[in-house]
Image 1 (cartoon, rainbow, N blue to C red):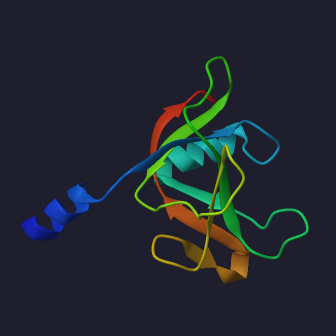
Image 2 (image 1 turned 60 degrees about the vertical axis):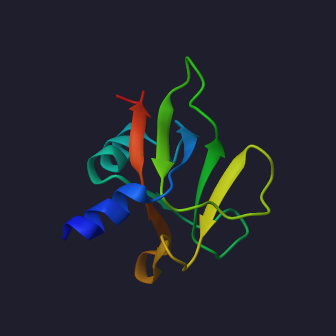
Length: 114
């Protein structure tokens, strides 16, 4: 990577914080994987066939288990207040068709699911 590319990378806008709470799909093992590879993956919501990453807006609430993250990919517009969603394919949202998942790159800033 050239110094110009590094500078452009550093100048990308960061969105967040966002958080995901510990759940049957946001397990301790998933949180460890997310922290290790700095990616969040998501599957289609109930009654949907569109893979998407979902999260809550804002910091991880104190005394809650989950992860907090920032990303350079803006969330979708027109979602319910307090929620964030990333659908694709679009710049920054990769769709892995054979696994039916969407994924975004992120920086995990807090993981209380240790």
